[in-house]
Image 1 (cartoon, one colour):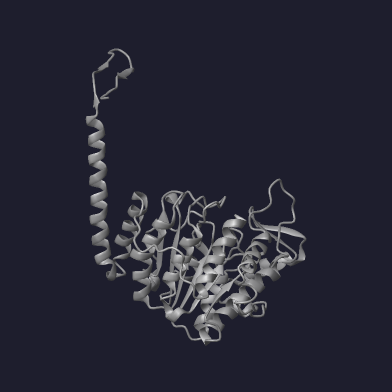
Image 2 (cartoon, one colour):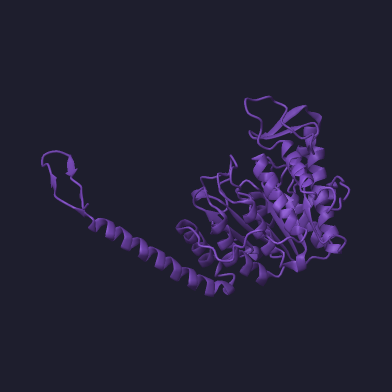
Amino acid sequence: MLLHYEVSMKSHPHPERPDRLRAIASCLADAGIFPGKCSLIPAREITEGELEMVHSVDHIETVQKSSCMVASYFTSDTYANEHSARAARLAAGLCADLAVSIMSGRSKNGFALVRPPGHHAGIKQAMGFCLHNNAAVAALAAQRAGAKKVLIVDWDVHHGNGTQEIFEGSKSVLYISLHRHEGGRFYPGTGAADEVGTMDGRGYSVNIPWSHGGVGDHDYIFAFQHIVLPIAFKFAPDMTIISAGFDAARGDPLGCCDVTPAGFAQMTNMLTSLSQGKLLVVLEGGYNLRSISSSATAVVKVLLGEKPSSEMSYVTPTKEGLQTILLVSRIQLEFWPILQETYTALRAQWDSVSSLDSRRRAKKRKRLVGPFWWKWGSKRFIYERLYKS
């Protein structure tokens, strides 16, 4: 998987590069975790038959053809070299085997340190640095191993459009994504709150679309408390998979958000209470080497049984975060009545915040005194501001 890299030399290295795996492995080694506290499973290439359960034959063949070329591109930002197809098959195969190992009880949980990432890869297309959808492959492998219901929580800063597309008609896989959206202006543009799935899968796609950048721990934890966990517990999965992109981390050049390693650890810890602890974490994005390595290490420590270093039980969301979570709860209430109490509480909290803002604006206006006048016959309007000392 380290042999998958962009051949063309450009002024800046591609953000999805081999150093991502090296940085995480080095940080885990420095923490005495890898190797040492974790057992390794042998990697294998996913079979064509397994891939056909997720992707179209045309897609599989297109990815495979890249092995005959020194350099190629699926999209303007999704590259391949002669080793990329095999790297993608190894990544998918490892995720499938790790899911089976967890379902069988041979492993308690697992972290798939793999690349290329996968959650943008849809049924028919590679895009967004992703070739094969590793989380989707893992979910179906878990089902073949006995899991009737699988939960995928995707906290990558970008919406996992590929994963949603693959499972949008299924009610045996619940997909929950927290991502920047900004009214569809943030890549890939999908993942609005009203995208809830299709046919039998309506209500089994849950999108929490942030309206701006800079979102941090408190908004994410608040969303987990009020949307993710209530729906997840009601769904009662037999296996939980995290599409763990660390590009929502503080310092990431693409995500521009503010989640800390402690925040990722807390979210992981909250999910360990599901599916009897059967939890598989699959690496997705994350492009600041320091952020991705410290965040991944914090997550692995939770998988090893350590409690998060900081307690975040009582968090206050931003006004924008509260507005998004209120919107999602209103939409998902149709499919998950368990959210009724949450929606009522969030509605009251929103009314309180709005009322407080109104009082603050009124108070500010009262501080503003003095004359203003129009100059008739022109478009010029002069407003003279005099403030009380």
